[in-house]
Length: 366
Image (cartoon, rainbow, N blue to C red):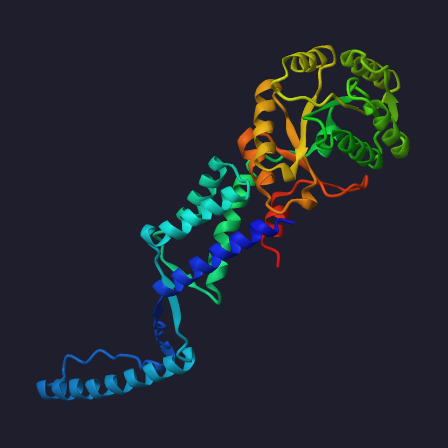
């Protein structure tokens, strides 16, 4: 995953690492004084003669010089003359590399505002502060990148498992998005996930327009072992979903997962139909589903759907095939709503709860 973005981030690390090496200066170790090597000082008596004082001063001068030589020698042995380095980067030093980083992020399908936020964070971490170099300059740059990306991705985090567990039942979740992005498969995966947690699940075949959509969901429901409520093709989706909720209430089911027809936010008729579904059978959560490999298109669609019906979170499918990672980094930031799950394959168990730290670690994995 994310091989293209990994390569671009690695190039930035190398370039800044070179710049740090150019700016770094050696630091001599601070020589510490060992108190045990310093003889105690005795205040001279008031009865001392002037000659005695002069003699004492001369003796002390010789003694002090000898003692200092001993202290320096001890410190040098203790420190083993190990040199360290430190650097200060100025804004001019990073102007070109940061511009290249922003272009690299944009080429990885990361939205402009998100790219700018990441670049600004990296700049704040690296510019103007005195930093000491450890064993590897690349670690300093990598840590700055990791923090910048993590901060963007962790701005909105939501645990759907915990929400469903603690919410009043039945919990109604509606899935929306365009055709072919994996809504039906995601419903099947979540059905199995909730069932494995000991919850009872009902699925509603609310996509009554696409030919074969009802049958497709019915096959998934049979394989996973959950109840499906369906009507005839071309029927009223709101009626189907309403019946599913009534069935869930009557049978004390825990979760209702409602499929809907794929649509663009610009399709006025279908958007009005979706709003009708939300009036007749109010959802507890509306989840937007799209493909991670769609990149900026997925980000734009998420923002448009969020403007139209106020989504509560997103599921990104085909994340395992995504070489760029831009959609996953951008969607939560742009919509101000969390990514909940990542689709990682075709199996019913191939659904990973979104974890910003895991995602960032994948970007920098060898």
